Image 1 (cartoon, rainbow, N blue to C red):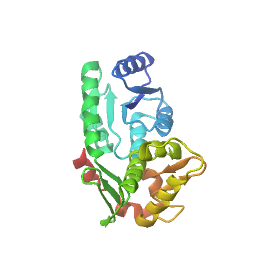
Image 2: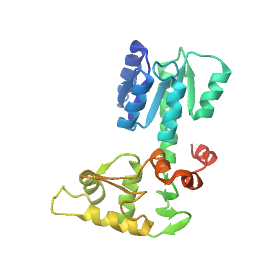
Image 3: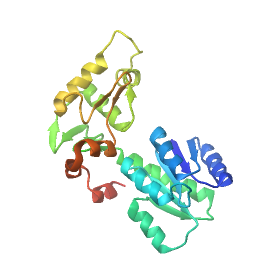
Image 4: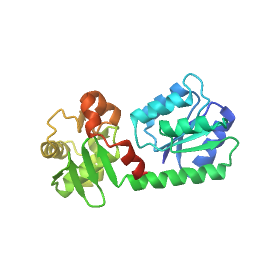
Length: 247
């Protein structure tokens, strides 16, 4: 798993990094709030451990920004503050769990595993705006309307949704969807993206499936969709209560 640790104490940051790397995770360490947001944009981690007492941008500011970029990202807060008001405020801002310092590394690792289990379960149902994929039932709906896809079309859309917010290259899609070696002579990825756009009523350049020129395709994050769709985005995005139920 890709993990982001935002911790300004160098010794504690290294301690956490080594402990989580020993579990086989790839860890990125940021030592101030601005660096944490930038690292998040670059890495798109699957879990973030966030200290509240951060320079440049404090942890609560960072948490708000991360939530705008990804509504489903598991966030575990670390803090030396014991006030109930701080814990309540963090949970209201979208934190999934909170630990006070000092803490046990064994407990922190267990809490990370629990958060990742919940995320994996939530990833059976993928959403982007009014588009929804049920990976268990193998169904796709847009604005509540069922959309019939072939197996390859579903697999292509699934890969783009699983990597939401990130560009997925044509080479990656050839490998994961078609199990093909890269070949300059095939345009099968572009052909199937066009099939998807027609069925999803998302004509090029597309709001839901965007072309990243010279690289590949991506399904934008909630923050990117909100910029394009404006107020309309909030009428189709998943309600906060429903997101909570998924977790």
